[in-house]
Length: 407
Figure 1 (cartoon, rainbow, N blue to C red):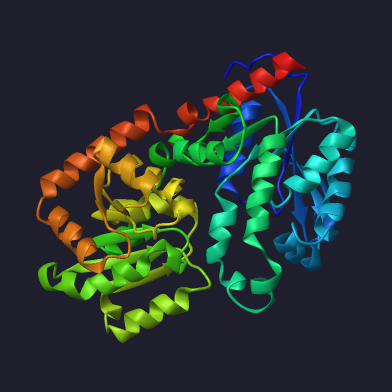
Figure 2: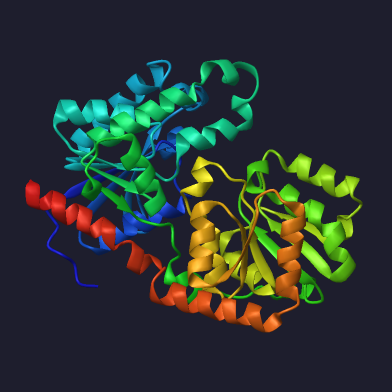
């Protein structure tokens, strides 16, 4: 790939957790490296032997020592100064040690620390919002009980998101809906907010290897597949509760769940209560290299999200993974995913948390195999033409080209 003339710009990505894995961070970093930028990634480690600089797939990863207290204090980053002070000292050392010229800060928990150093050293920062963190925090189990309920104020996080987005050189979001939401809440100029969706790398659907044991395990089933985090807000209780009704007309139906969360016990208890253990397979979390094998066993791939401000303005990466391999989708009516699926005719939608409507839409697809095939074909073509990483990441390059012109 031909590099742009960017060798003079050093980008410092800032991540407040261990790395790898983080597909979005890795994809963005490698894309910018391919464009000719020199990229260093600030991240954390809990192992003193891993502190320092390491080359990871071309990314210069710089790990700083952290500990559990510091990790837990990140949840109170906008209530107490401890986390901000500790992190800003590490980020300052990072900038000075590696002569960083632009900071690329991933998400809002660490941006207050990055902004503090940005002002001091006059290094601009870009804020990369992976999600609507203040909204989604409302659904975290640890914020609904105990000290978390009293110490963590999501309104403060919302105010921080608005403040640090306004101070940023540019803001990256994942959908047009997320951009519109931020524009409504701030006075940021529209051109400073750039959507970069979490689409798939071409290698995901062109260079995979199949695991035969997975195909064999479900070869006689009509598979509803879910991949990803299984927290209750993701909607799997709706699916589980629809299965007894669906079993009446689809004798070989099977729900396959690839993923996990701390709330899995609730899902399993519901399966036991309904005595449908034989038609639900909890596969646990699996390596991403196995996702194509699971997707290709599926008849319908699902994303039954509950509706909330976060889900309504973001795309789940699974949508693009499902479609890339030619599978029809059934998604809840969370705004962003419903509009995407219906606009491109790659699946159907159901009312969120509506057991009856979910079952109805599954039966609609089941009775029309040719429709499922058409939706799958349209999805695969769409990903290949428009919704792959090479296409959607162009906004990243444009951001840095614009910043370079102003330097």
